[in-house]
Length: 222
Ligand SMILES: *[C@@H]1O[C@H](CO)[C@@H](O)[C@H](O)[C@H]1NC(C)=O
Figure (cartoon, rainbow, N blue to C red):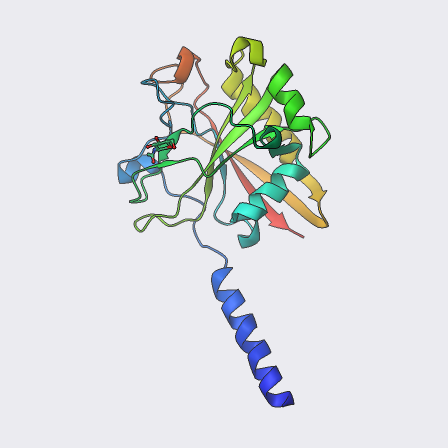
């Protein structure tokens, strides 16, 4: 009896280890696989995918639940009580999956993971969409984020001036270093990546220029 229990415990550990094996690639450049560092904002232009959560992060961070908990640790939460704000946008990460809609959209929660996002919807703030690079030809497991700082609802959620760089930098600033939420603590490091997208406003939604820098975050669970 004891032997069977021990055996199944080992089996469970092995299975768990397989699904959460650490990856060995930070990310693949979407352009290398026919993709783009701009998403499709449904209006002929795209939002920059200006933050990447590295595939070398702790595997548990890269799951849907994992990125949600990390987002809460750095001041974001799910959209205001599930109220749908705007259409989903798609991205092609060059991983063989083609254009795929965002996995989720998260908004700044103003210190209240339940109701704060409603405040963000009303007064504007930082928000991001999440895309996972997990297709058959470039399976890094990395998460590509389209981060932007928005105006309030009366302005139809337009992006503020320089809102892509501003939103990205605000997210990175709250992420880097030590953070925690729900009993999970994180250490996050940042690296600037150039060459993934051009600086300027070419093809960028609302014609808002960016500096062309993508911030790579490596998030480790302590
Ligand atoms: C994204 O979702 C919208 C709304 O559900 C749908 O109309 C559209 O076809 C989807 N796009 C992709 C690329 O799956």
